[in-house]
Length: 201
Length: 206
Image (tube, rainbow over all chains, first blue to last red; front, top):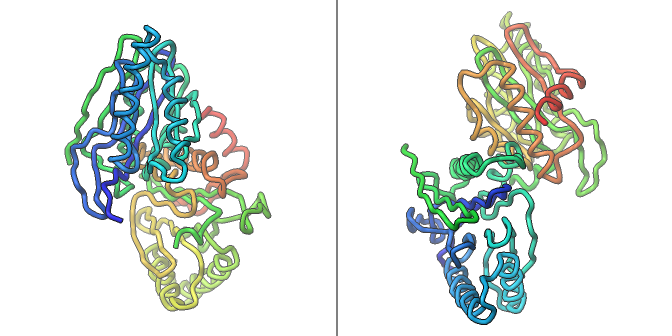
């Protein structure tokens, strides 16, 4: 089946001051590079974002569902949905569709009450991570760099640099991961900051 | 093909003063660990080393052939084989058994006029590079190498990098484990690092 797939490297790092999400920006259609300018990290609220790996259409659908649910939650309860709640909600949605699953690997990162990082598989398997996580075809390369250099006491700036290095290493060795442009999202108490980092050559 | 070469991570790095080869020590039969002290790096001649990933019997068999050929070459030509010669010879042997192959992936490193590393796949495909890796954990190792390799590294830096690459593979690849063997080949020749030396490097990394 020809399907727009991201064939990706996305990573998430949790440190004490927040969460850093990073991803490459290449999308592939079978063996063709479809675009080198896609955003794989999608903000859901002003404090929560998810990363895309797998079917682009599926993740975009899920993002729309989550966004609506988050608004509805705010209306109903008069407070923002926590990242933990959203991760559980997403896990439920994914598991409900067990017989016609969303083809996705999602990392969810947020800072509502506390820094939160979680990893979801297509059937809703939910793992809250205390340190770092990576998904997508290039994840072995990235996870090795993170395993090698992650430290719990890292500052956000250091975590951001490490995130970029990890995605870049994957970009060099995984054909489905682009290495020219990397999207980085930093989530702190103050909110979400996005950055596109470009490399030449 | 790489799924057949499970159970190992091997790494080779070229630096200013020599080459470093490193491998884990786990030997598996299917999903069972059968030995925790496997040797996957071998001395072929004074300045020639080989690291193998895959079927251990196939690796040992090829090592015996190469050792004999290296000796024969010395007798005939009066000097040690170059690294390239050994790589080409290995490639020829592997390609000659294309339809009844050695199920292994080899890294050949050594020092002739300068340090060199070659990676040779099951069909005899040869690539020379500054850093190479093979086996089920190669993805993890390449992540570290791609991030941290520098061309002007000292031997000490290269050893440290190789150990770091292996360490990540040990942690994240289930078929890789049970310690690290490190070999350096310099102008002075082949030398295997002692367990204590490797432990010392590992300790400094934490």
